[in-house]
Amino acid sequence: GAVVSQHPSRVICKSGTSVKIECRSLDFQATTMFWYRQFPKQSLMLMATSNEGSKATYEQGVEKDKFLINHASLTLSTLTVTSAHPEDSSFYICSARGQMALRNTEAFFGQGTRLTVV
Amino acid sequence: GNSVTQMEGPVTLSEEAFLTINCTYTATGYPSLFWYVQYPGEGLQLLLKATKADDKGSNKGFEATYRKETTSFHLEKGSVQVSDSAVYFCALSDQGGKLIFGQGTELSVKP
Image (cartoon, each protein chain N blue to C red):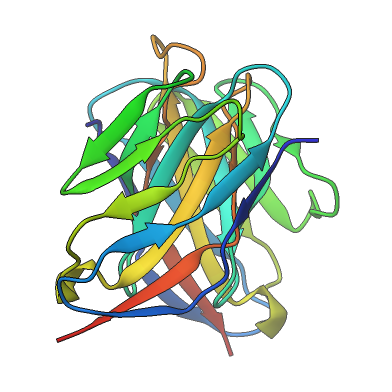
């Protein structure tokens, strides 16, 4: 299957600082990328959907100003957690769908980023 | 709205036992259905999928059949191994490509 690389895999930051997470599709062009958040022992919750060149669409309850998503190219989307606080500590996962993907086919997932805010 | 419900875990089995993890869904239209696996500390990996009714997805000894009449996509494996210990997520994909996940089922296989 297609490869999606997410970086960094782990990051520890101080409270009040910002952290950027990158999601890259390595061997296909991703017109749509999704960002999910997973709390310990829980399922994945969709945070936002981003389409290349346009603003991200956020799910209800997700703060747009706190979780900045940029999808500037067909191979890269970034999630920036601004002014991070301990409650933002979580496992963040991206997924990407290709330009030629049929509807209802799978998205490919990055390996995830474990964010710890201290 | 669309939703996915999985059987609660954790599920603990002995090696070589038979595995079933139940998954039912609610959806409008004709979603695709997936099983993802997450090993400790890692991201999600697609295990298998089915895109239409009566399709059977299979991989690594795991199988699941898309049952439209019962809105189910139960995961089965005839003989589990210790290395199958992980969290398994059932999911459906809506028309826009979003994945909606079940709550996950933790499987622990003992030698």
